[in-house]
Image 1 (cartoon, helix red, strand yellow):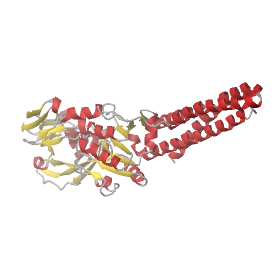
Image 2 (cartoon, helix red, strand yellow; image 1 turned 120 degrees about the vertical axis):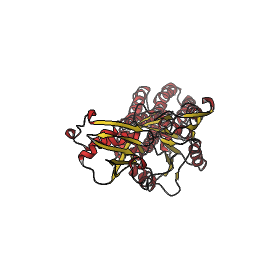
Image 3 (cartoon, one colour; image 1 turned 135 degrees about the horizontal axis):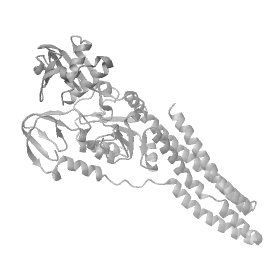
Length: 464
């Protein structure tokens, strides 16, 4: 739906995955507002258009994605040193020439030439591109792809990390499925999976996939002809005869059961066999592997927070975030404001999100990282793209960038020490132009070699 509208007739099952990353549909009743970008799953519904696409929320989100504020260029310390060093070398060469003019005119050109040759500002300029270039390459091998070298510098200064939840900390397609009720036999599970495969509802797809994985290949042998009288009631469930046994799966009312109390983030799918309610499956989003430990490690040295549009947060995720650091029911503009609030407090913020509704916050943050697990997923413009399976390595990635920055500063000191020593010897008249010509490329080679080896060692140690 490319417009904002109000539901007038029918029951809506709106898939907002294009906007929020949440694959499960949201149930809407007559009178509810439906935002642009959602897709109806199920029977036809009647809508009253409130705003055209040009004035819709979807249009505003696109504007946030494409029109994010232009960040000022990062101060290039090494470039500044190199420029000033070049001017200083020219002044030193002039001063040396004047000094030897009054002392021994024959030494003017050998000394001036040696000073100009041995001084190597390129060694200064090479340290950052090589260090950050190697860091980008090593991060890419581990699943984090940075836009440019400046992102490494900004990541090294990060002291606050904000996460989106759905599709970021939780997997899009992975769910935890638990059965509550009379124990099911393998044959029962096979019947439920066979019927669920005929439903277009996302929960049915989750259930069918989970049950199929629990069956051995030789147990999943029900043919389509074993199912008869299959009928789906949109918003209620699906029923049919499977191998001669009437089965219903869906809501509690549809299956003749009683609604059970739901914990945070749970959805229930009830099951009845032959008119007898057998129990229900509890389905909930599953946190990514290792993400709880990763957040805990980040929280030991950085400020961490969770900003989500969801109404609930799973207890296993909520417990790793400090009290007061979780904000729920956040609209896209409120996510951006949360980032701005931390920045007003002097924080350097890294935002991790996935959906179009995170685009504004990703653009506002000092570093915006988009998590993606499928090539079909929408990837807002950001500073970096991270493979979803690599999210648990975020503490290591931040450690690598901080060490890369220290390597740059160390190589800068080494280069300056070489230049100060070499220029001093040349000014004193103890270095010939030929020897200076030999030392000059060696300085660049030594800096590049030091940066390369140090970056590789730092990357290996960061993951220990």
